[in-house]
Image 1 (cartoon, helix red, strand yellow):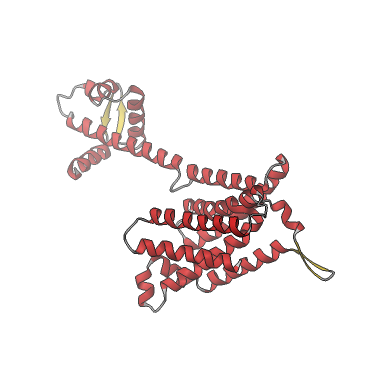
Image 2 (cartoon, one colour; image 1 turned 30 degrees about the vertical axis):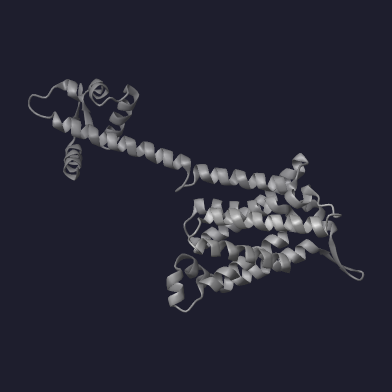
Length: 309
């Protein structure tokens, strides 16, 4: 764990050194360093551990069901699965680090120059956080495999980001979502007799998709609804301007009809009906049988729109 954590830190340091050199972009630097270390690992394994069988299901996908069988025993005393002690200790380290340096981490992450001017070291805090990330990944690797590590590091925070802009709430939501993915994923795996890690990843993806679609601020459905609503509102204001331009003693009733909107505004008849209904709802116009006409409020809306343009 210690050696792998140090290797992870070296990877981060080299990647950021390449980025800081301004000679290549971030994605190119990552694409250069990671394959380099991966290739070195393959060479070392082939040279010194070629007789060891590396099970792809355990290494890549992980098999949490086997974790309880690897136990920590002192003499005849069984202290339980090693995974609980390892990840429990790592979890405690993460809680202590973030809890003790929360304000400093927040300041150094979002305003590094201000943090430096106040006497904090943004680089030291950054690499302290990267050390915690490295230890967590390495400790979890033996238990859950690489895919679940990536899924649970990225997906819960990404989902929480879609649901709130408050950093404290975002961290809390990330933890809750991660726990839900673990619990629901395990129950799903038991129900379908499938991979526990795969089920957890699937659940995390589904939760992210739901947030991506229905988030109050970032959700696709919400944005689509707002876009349609804004289009309807803008069209209703155009309608008031159209009515105002044709208002007068010699006004033609046809100018206030839906047919005129279809012909001159090039709206479809259903959309013109929607605009009329919206304008009636907002009290821009009223229906004065057999025609529509502007209300005093609608006249004011049209004049304000003309002046602002």
